[in-house]
Length: 146
Image (tube, rainbow, N blue to C red; front, side, top):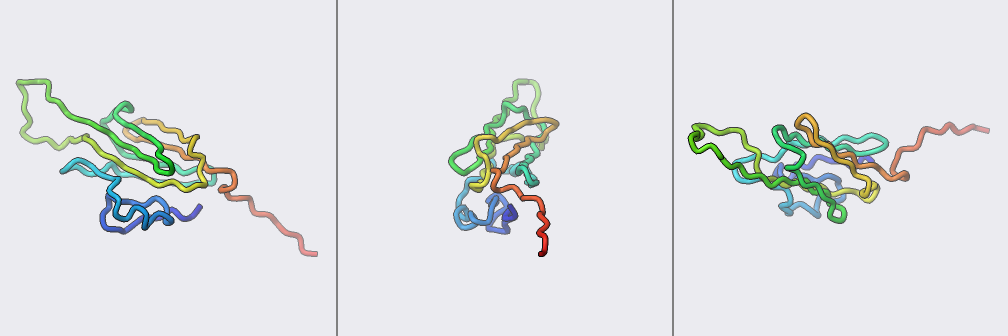
């Protein structure tokens, strides 16, 4: 499928995954992070078998993520709060920030949504979204000329 696009819309926090949904989520705020933080960066790749989503989230644990599928929307979110348990220490400067965020992506009907796999290793959350058989590119076939 070649309709994977990068949106140059109203905000980088409102990405569109596929061009048939450009208008559907233009004003939706399904992608957010707490104030002062940025959304985790995402790479989206495609091969003949699947789409792969990689989210950079160093310093987190797999238990920090909640990944769900709501109809045709893939939702990745984290609800984190930092508690300073050491009463003798206070921050002079704090730049490490792993707080709440939510990223949503619309999936096409050409994927096997019930077979999505997720893993977290080395600070990267990886999701593999397999394509349906009819969405996979067929091999080139030579046609004989009579």
